[in-house]
Length: 286
Image 1 (cartoon, rainbow, N blue to C red):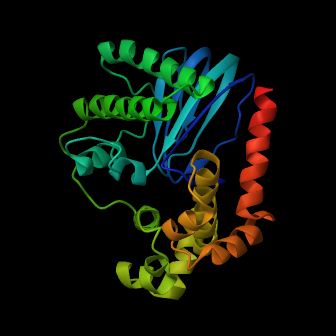
Image 2 (cartoon, rainbow, N blue to C red):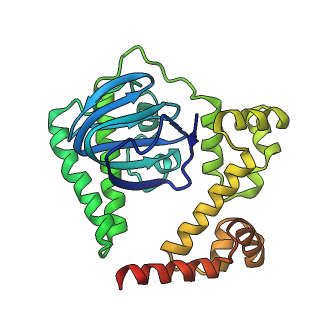
Image 3 (tube, helix red, strand yellow):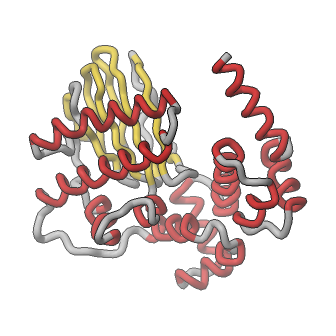
């Protein structure tokens, strides 16, 4: 079964489709799916639920899910990972508690919103995120981030209100802990070497490689490489940082080292990539 990874703290997408966009699959991240319009059936962990406009679903890491579409459906997707939950961008009193609530959500089909007032609150939040994402207006990034954080906290509140008392706060699966460790230390190359990660988790380097591949469908080095490339792409596209500043932030020895790494993965230099994306944006607005 295909397992998807996320290489940014959060990611937004929305699409209108007449058939299921993807077959059954799993994530290494959280995904909120809001039904803007349409009807059909959600399948999660072999259980089914009839969906309609206004329903919001939380897909947690390791859940297997898909959709059977009855009428043309517009989906809104918000994907986020532990690094976003733990970042300073998410102003929440108890980050560990928030993460625990999300990880221990009931892995059953159905709308996550149990509080009627919150159902009325979520729709304008989602519409505002979509509007800001499309318009790219002044301060849109800051607004989107605040709206995303609000949506996550609303979801956490709905889960917490109906969480069984007998649930205990246990350590998550080791595979998710390893992913979280990598995400939190991605800027420090010395901390994400296989031998260092193995020592941290008390796993031999040989077993660590097999274990990681089994649970993520890619080698640990592939995951780290893809994650670093994605972060570099985001900075090239969405920031004014100079190449040498990006190299310093990402833990490369110098700009030449970053150039060599990026060209090997993407076939172009960072400067060429930034220029091509800038030209593409100009074409879209022409």
